[in-house]
Amino acid sequence: MAKRHLLKELFQDPKGFIGSEVLVKGWIRSVRKSKAFCFIVLNDGTCQRNLQIIADQDLSNYGDVATMISGFSVAIKGQVVESGGKGQSIEMQAKEVEIIGKVDEQYPLQKKATSFEFLREHAHLRSRTQTFGAVARVSHALSFATHKFFHDKGLYFLRSPIVTAQDAEGAGEMFRVSTLSMENPPKSEGKVDYSQDYFGKETFLSVTGQLEAESYAMGLGGVYTFGPTFRSENSNTPRHLAEFWMVEPEIAFAHLEEVADLAEDYVKALIGYALDNCKDELEFLNFRPRVKGGKLGEAPNGKEGYLEILEHVRSSEFIRVTYTEAIEILGKADKKFEFPTNWGDELQTEHERYLTEIHFKSPVIVTDYPKDFKAFYMKQNPDGKTVRAMDLLVPGVGELIGGSEREANLEPLLAMMEEKGMDRGPLEWYLDLRKWGSCPHGGFGLGFERAVMYVTGMSNIRDAIPFPRTPKNAEF
Ligand code: 4AD
Ligand code: MG
Image 1 (cartoon, helix red, strand yellow):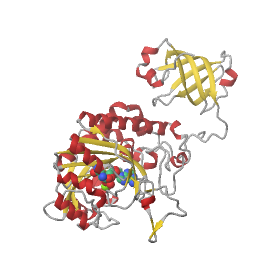
Image 2 (cartoon, helix red, strand yellow):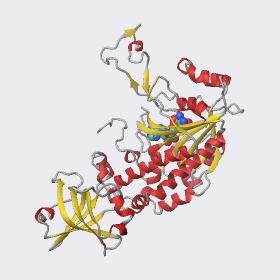
Image 3 (tube, protein in one colour):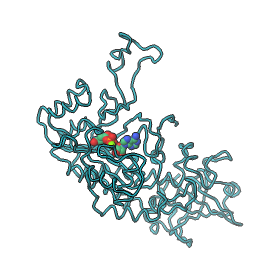
Image 4 (tube, protein in one colour):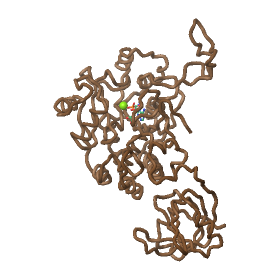
């Protein structure tokens, strides 16, 4: 058989294909029968658009073709013709229809409006729906845009290790990696003897690649990691995953302002790339007909005009405030918060969303947080109370990015480690970076699935990653 044409190719230059014979392969979205022919709507996953195909009753296997239903996989050869139908420029007149794979009445995606929750339980099939096809293609575009953005900025891609012995964020939310017997582990003085474990010490899945990125930034000038990270925090929220992907750029000879500029440019580059390259997907996600109750078709964030908002964000300046200013704003807010907003309290999701969605109605970069609830590596301010941290908050999501300038001097870094009760042993190599050729440097981490949520408007992070891992759930 001839080479197949992807629908993506056909719709890139529809007029150019008129009159040509093409072969397409994909899945049936629907079949509508009339007396002498049927309309087949086909999608092959390569783009948002469907191809309408007319199959006449003179096809040799018309009897079978007319009984096809949504979900069948087929190969169809035919001629591309101009379409009279509105909203489509071309359609196809079928010459041969080969049925490749059938579905029966057990096929779970038969129902028209299928809830996102139902689809999560059928995550192995959901890429065939219009919504999850769109989200998957936008995710691809965002990952491509990430590599392009940092490459263009002169940063190099770094593969940071996934197995680690250090709790870099100090949050103690790590998954253990071990080959020891769980029933009968070797013991010494009543405790598990990890010296007999695979790596000869206690090891975990990494919560961040930052410390290794710092090491390479101070050799290459700038690097970024882009890979899976793991947190066993018990947060069953629409914004937390146990396994998520993080993008962590790190730049040398840079202070916080430059790090914040990079974060702002990066977020705009992501939005811009998606708007320029995923128009059909974003329009579909934006204008899906609403169905109540979290069904397929719900408008993103319950808002109209989401695309216009993204378009605006792409060309506007992000707001920048200090933590102290943010606390003042929250103190004056005429909204009752569940959690307190005194200086020294952590900003909770409700506070972050108030700032970005209600007060500023814009992405906001909050800087200079109290040192107590931030990681040990952050650059300390002269006030002795705050650190040069930055979080980038966006509407609908809250915290999209967390980052900081790093403490580049050995003494204050050691003092902070002591204050936080940290063991310097596993971090001796990290301290070396401050002993020899140290320089101001910093970076940030962007939660990739949160970026997918932000750009697609999906409201649950479980729908922004193909196979979500959350507490009590590691299906597929
Ligand atoms: O703010 P976090 O914890 O920062 C770090 O890990 C630093 N090492 C980054 C750096 O400076 N290089 O995490 C960064 C981002 C958050 O802003 C959030 O978007 C995402 O990672 N994130 C999660 N995403 C999904 N599920 C979780 N459980 C997440 N925890 C953090
Ligand atoms: Mg954070």
